Length: 224
Image 1: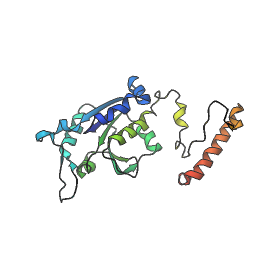
Image 2 (image 1 turned 120 degrees about the horizontal axis):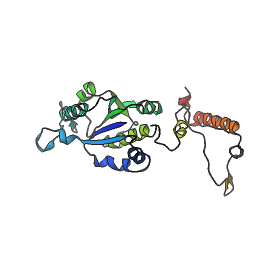
Image 3 (image 1 turned 180 degrees about the vertical axis):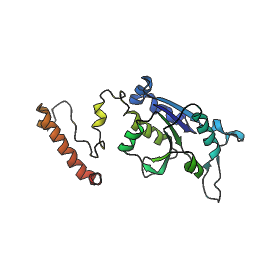
Image 4 (image 1 turned 45 degrees about the vertical axis):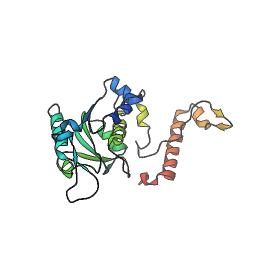
């Protein structure tokens, strides 16, 4: 997978990709991540990339020209499956969408900032608008890190045990069941005996029952 991230602040994004699972994915060449500073595509004095909104109002808006020039520059090198703009009013990111995007080979991710981007970017230059939640961040960089993490971990070979991702919450529209590890008893608190029985069919049955129970109690909307 190849991911190009367009941002005003590439330094905000570097750290998440230098540790843990994402670092492993990059080191093993499962994914290539490149950050592109939007200011490098500005034709304005002092590398200006934002301006006041037409019609007045508070805040600044990222201009279409540098974004368009950056996208066109990237498209000269490869074809892209998706060009994604991260916005709080986009389609909500969920596990099904993460599964879908994890199968793509080439993705562009655009990080907004200030009041957002010129609407023409959204109308003519992108393929998807994605939100990570019903709240507003200072910019799209943290959302980009969340989005990339959610899809990269699903690439075959990234996780040590590929079946691990298949048992995550939301993979089957259910929350994950409780999990335990050693010791089997601590401070008088015991692990359910079924998990120590070695009876795999019964353990699977218990986990399915618990997943359904937890989902019904915490997220009944998922069962619809």
